[in-house]
Length: 107
Image (cartoon, rainbow, N blue to C red):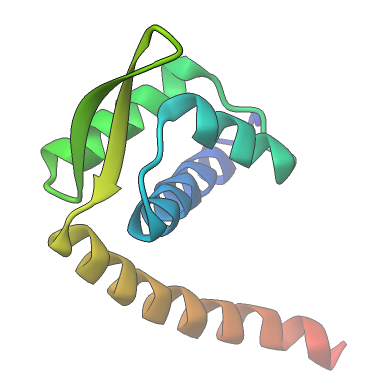
């Protein structure tokens, strides 16, 4: 994405998407890269891992090291704070989407 505004909005939605899945259960970086790819987004490790680390440093995610098939994996799960943030974000997103898309339905 070349447009700075579009990219910043996209990355904000990636953060929400990560919180959504982390609130449902444990996630890990590669899994989220693949999940976003399923939705048509191309995002790499250089983008996803800093987002995960930032969400953890903000207290929205908690991580734990594990080993899967002989490889170390850092799993993340939403904290109570992360779940509260997600509830608030859902309210704001619902309100904004309703208002922004209302204009399209009138045309």
